[in-house]
Image 1: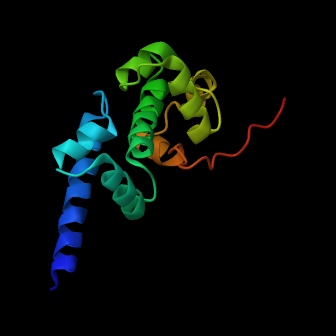
Image 2: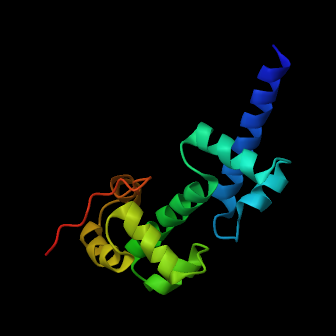
Image 3: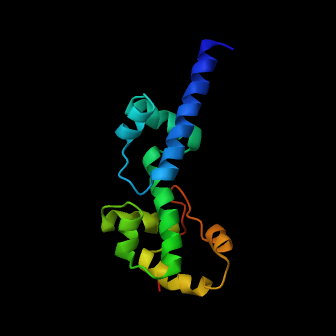
Length: 144
């Protein structure tokens, strides 16, 4: 194994640690600089390598995790959209709503109202069926 191969494997292990940290700490304020410091990489290098390994930036991955959790909380129906926003670690309702709409294809309030239709479906099935779509692939809303 060459030193280049060894370095690549070390970088992949670091990226996995970053991804695992995002999965664990998605409700906390996380930024690329803090994530990079935690694995002894520069922020730019972390962002480039993370995108190569996982197909999206660390911030995009973090927001996808937050939106996934928000979808589960909205399906429960006992929290307002604002409460859900803060519960998943977002500090701006506007940014949360925009990102939610990009990934899910509808605003969080509409999703919450439509989630009542999935009441009675086991949560594991509802999660799979309503999983957020990454990278702005959500279908455009149909005008009514």
